[in-house]
Length: 160
Image 1 (cartoon, helix red, strand yellow):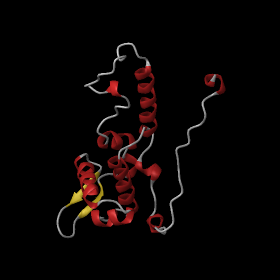
Image 2 (spheres, helix red, strand yellow):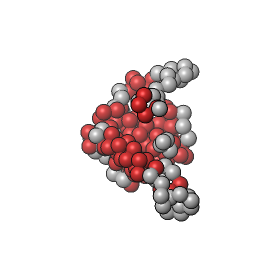
Image 3 (cartoon, one colour):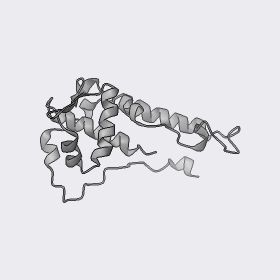
Image 4 (cartoon, one colour):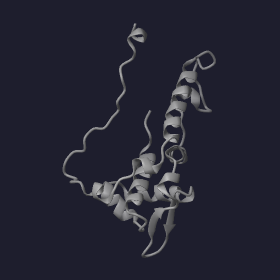
């Protein structure tokens, strides 16, 4: 499973806004900090504002800031608002054409896994992933450490 860049940018925009301690931040500033598309980030901020996670101020001295405390911004709610769907396999789509859909048990298992994924996100808020301004001043010319995924091997009894 992979989140879209839209959700990734949404979480990053929220983290950046939080680190700026209530001052208005601009899309330009945020895009430059992360080295991401300004146009794409503008769409992300628009959705986050519409969904009530950010407060936007238009105009020359405008920008955005958190609309509520970080402890009240649920990560599961953010991902649900920014992901277009959670169709992990073809049969999750309304236009499903899979030949074995009527007898296949895989969707039940994948739905359970998706529920577990959502449940973990639902237990956390923006406050749990908050950064401080100094965290954004790290050198950009060094490659970032790889942080995941950390899937463990299958249990031996399941392996065969």
